[in-house]
Length: 584
Image 1: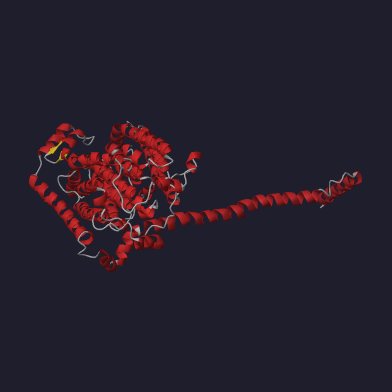
Image 2: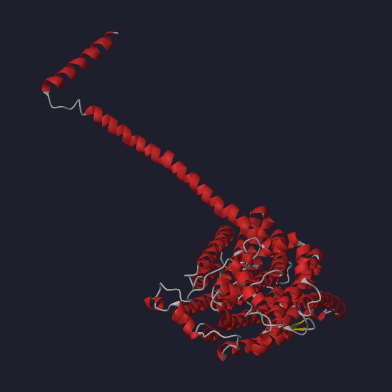
């Protein structure tokens, strides 16, 4: 919130932004302190509304307006599953209290009063909520688009807190889910696959915020995988350590964008593209140092925070299923590669922000993002005063210059504050003195059991596992430095050789295209068919009824003419008819 003051200082929607931010903060705090599933669900939805408002804050940008709708719709899909699962478990157990639900569900399954299949279905439906909120495959597509919101939102909501709510709910539901092995397996493999998916896409992204967004998806995958293999405290420990360094990385990216706008103007395509950056370490030393700390932390280099939590997850995954460990281990290598690619491209080498040729390439359609015309940051319609701020006014506040400069103290101070826990908070969860696990452990365990497990620490096993994860990270860093720092390997030549794989990653596994074809275009086709049925069948039946009424009325009006002799004739014909008919 302190950082936001510096970042949004010149924005005409400043007051509205803080109103939305306060709504989000209170909703998130409510979610965390809720003692039962109903209260969690209420705050869960409030958090979703806040996310919608904040992603679409600059709603006069088409991309932002579409991104907030996409986030809202995708999250509703998951939340509908969560609601069905909640109601199903309440129907079975008669409670919304976590411990009570767990005990009763276990008894019902053991006695055969509730089938294992139905209990598993309830568990999977509950898990759909976290799949959407924590951006797990296949409901992860909203998170990268959510980067259209202001950067403090990307840091607060989409890196550190809101997306972690899904992992938090899985942890809260642990008493219920731990008795459902099929559900636990689904959770573990969903997490592992999402971690791998996020990393493979992040490798080729050029937008600094989108790259960090896919990194977040990948790291959330680690947390979900930990929950699935029963590593309760390891998952929550990574949730905590990741919150510090990822929030710092996002805030650093905001600082970079803030500096780049001085040079390239307020075009989001240009201000966020790493191909226009480079050499920023000279101009932004504090941002650069903090970004490097965050990068080393997320890569899992000891003694930084990410190492201890990620290593604990990988160790637990290996004990549960070596295949899961292998996916996590390979992902760790890719994480190191794409994070250092991001660091080197942004802060090392020559500054490319004034290179008109690159700018023209990016705006000419070779960039992955569609060119967006520069426009005022103010959204406009909420407050009439905001409409008075034109693009010229906004530029008046930000004079163009040839080089970026360091951000104001309100933006750099939070970076420096977050850098400290990014380095040392992991020491709370070392395997030989795990204070975090003594504080937070699985609901079914006692403190005595936890202490007993911690006493069985095997140094050799730890060194083998840690050596493997650090080794693969160092390989990833080496490749990144050869490609993007010393330029001894040409990444463009490699991309040409593996063009199908490169395009597969660059186009985000074509998942957005599949969703568009299948759901967006598909639902439109279905709507057109329904319209045809409505027009021809429903409206046809109504119109036919009207037409019959009209015809019968037109015919009857000749019979109702008010002449007595005509009525007498009708009576005579009718009587004659009856006589003839009865005679026959």
